[in-house]
Image 1 (cartoon, rainbow, N blue to C red):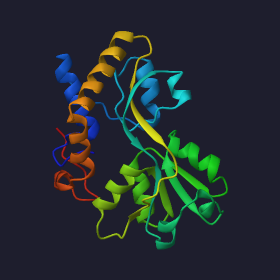
Image 2: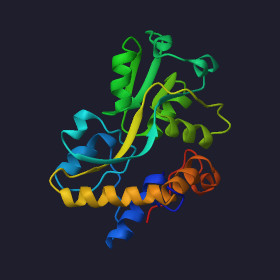
Image 3: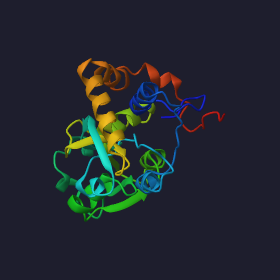
Image 4: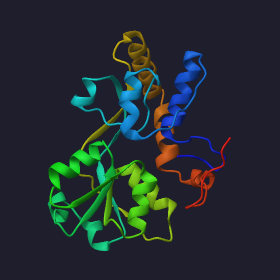
Length: 227
C-alpha cells in the first residue's frame, strides 16, 4: 500500500527493508503495473520482486524464486451477499456474472480456466479493480485472500465482503534474476533466518491481524502526497 505521505508500506516493504539493511545497500522502491514486473526484472531495471507474486512453474522458468514467505489462496471481494457464500467457482460460472482481476496475474488465469463463462475485466492495479466492484460494474474481484481482506477493511461503509474460504494454494515468493546464484542463496538463507527467529511471523501479524496501520492510508478516493 501507499501511505498518506507517499511511502510504500506493507509486509513486502518491511521484508525488503530488512533484506536491504542486512545486505548493507540502499533500498529503492519502483512501483509499476504487475504485468510488467517479470520483464523489468529480466532486463535489469529492478533487482528483486516483492509484490504478492505467486511461485508458478511458468514464472520459475524465467526467473529464480525464494520462499514462500507467505501462503495465500484465491478469494473474492464482493458487495453481493449471495456471492459471499460461494464454495466452488462453478457457482459463479455464468454469463450474468462480471469478474475483475489483475492483468497477467494468476487470478486472471484462474478465472479463465475455472470460470470461463463469466465476463472478465482485467485491470492494471487493485484500486481499479476495487472501484469496479464499488461502482457495481463488476460483481466480484478475484485476488489473493489478503488483498480482498485489506480492500474490505479500507471501505467499511461499502458493505464489502471477502470470501473466507479460498479456492487455491498460492505460495508467494521473492523473484530474483536467474543468473545470480549467490543472491538467490543469500536471500534464501536470510529468509530462513527470519522464519526461524520469529521475525517473519511478527511481520505477518503486524499486517494481517492488526489493522492499526489503516490509519496511515489516505482516505478512499484520494491520492497520497508525492515526495
